Image (cartoon, rainbow, N blue to C red; front, side, top):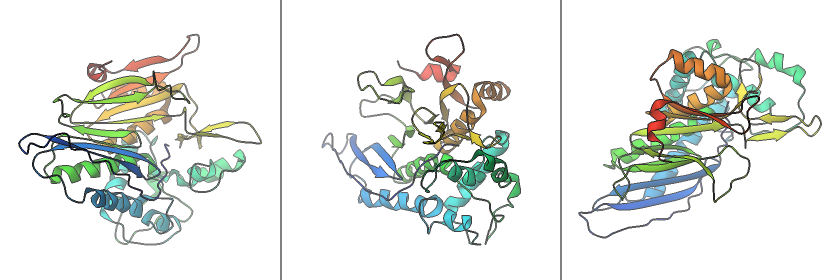
Length: 339
């Protein structure tokens, strides 16, 4: 499953006012660093801008970290993983409930009980180390969302099990920030955190927001970096891939990608390079992008066939006997690609 590193919040604020007429839209931009990654927020407003936006953003990022960050010792999830019995908060419950929904829909390919495997394969807060694959089967005994009881107050999980919502929490953070903007009367915005993005309305040119997704390569060519550019309104986009987030075992030389297949207990190994998912919420798009990477190309296509119209996808993959990347894009996705 996809791993997202949570860290402290450092706000680098850039506030640009594009015009001064109170009857015309003005545009604000906020760029910074939170949850171990970058964020970019743009929105349009008339009249007075949102006051103390930097502090509002800080509070929202910290609230998600306090609930779901496996990198913070005092977070709710860290305490639960240590065996504590505690009362969960609204953030935890919302993300857990959506995780259960996607787990059921994906046949278990998305599973937040993956925490012990995340640490074992070197993608958690612990230092990376050489791995002994003979341990995988014993760790799998702690994997499986069906082992958890429904959340109550207070709540605990079975001894030895560890939760990890990092494959959905960043998408939820985007949704939370969007809800915050809408509650303040903002109806045109673009919110992006760590590559996961959600848009509503239009930009200052009265056009759909333009969102580019990088090609599936380890190195970015700034002159030719985008695989595609979308026009987005009232949609969320999440992309998952195995082409940058990986580590190499110094003893065996094996390369381990960050998407873990909870069925096998090993990092996913298939011909999918990248999955981009369009969905109404970023939390949903984020979770399904991870599930599809774990399923592999055949499993993903079978899922889409049996759930027509559920979501739109763009898949990049390799195929034996063919040079270069191959692409599959659903009809609804293709209609939104600008170039």
